[in-house]
Image (cartoon, rainbow over all chains, first blue to last red; front, side):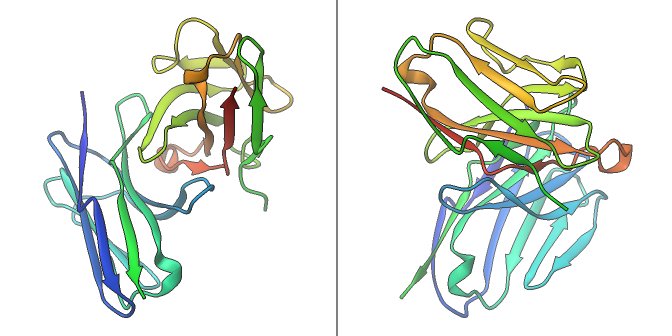
Length: 110
Length: 116
């Protein structure tokens, strides 16, 4: 079945650093979604990408939909403490169920 | 403009009892999805519903689990005779009818079920 490989699994960064994470798939996705989940909360949609090659920003976040439709990356610039959390990539399978990456846990070093 | 609402946020049940989880989608959204999440894992799809119809229940166990999305009122995920392995966070998501954005799902805060 379709799977998303998300990396890195976790990141330890200093406040103010830029962050980059990515997702790859062995099959094509028509939509890529990036979510953030805080402890005890539901995933919150950060960026939705609908077209191959699309580059979209949301504040300090930038995401791109790879031209092959098999990958996507998310960048966070100048990280701040509230960026801590787990970031998930997700894409819809043919029957609309979302397939999820395993998540990237972002931890900011004091 | 309220988002997806779920209640209760936390639910404790003893083995053998029933659990009822409720989800009210974003106003105007006609597609509802239920997911389950174990700690340190991504979400796993359970069921996809439209008003009064189950479209895809391939991720939902055949026994003890059922879901509905009636014409009026919230979507309900029902787990009968709960077992300890049912303990998890259950998330509901909704998406709009518009075909172009139908694949973008908005999530509720989840219901954390603990089976004692």
